[in-house]
Length: 171
Image (cartoon, rainbow, N blue to C red; front, side):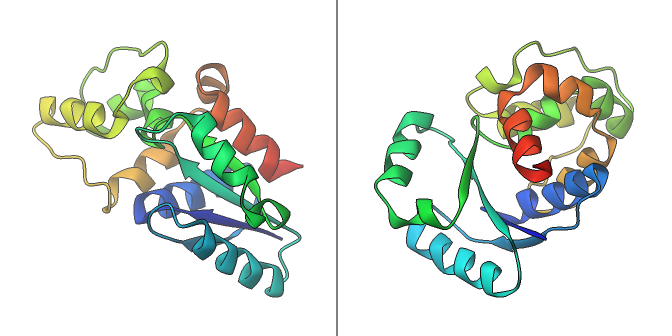
């Protein structure tokens, strides 16, 4: 069994659905913010619960991934978890599959070539939702429902952070 530490409710539910599609049933713990010490506590708990591996899924938001990697390398957390940095936020993964969004919102959504280069993918997704007369609720059902519709082949092509996550989950 594997454990995954995520940052928020939207990440938790989306990752649960993504892992289900990958054929994995992880133990997921949710932390808030950038507190590596809290992540270590969760990692130790997940290990005690029988997880052979723990993945810390970290959105980089406005930080450069190298800053997060350096903080991680300088922490004692690196002995407990494998780090997977999501380029900006998990919503970039949703933006990689415009047909999943189109299907969910019942509107035409243009293809996005490089979703991980969008600085605020949640805000970008909100603009798409507004075109459909809706709001994107990060903490609601939207991330979970979008994750159910994702075509992983599209994600693999467009999102290196998804490829890393998939490799960590499946190895």
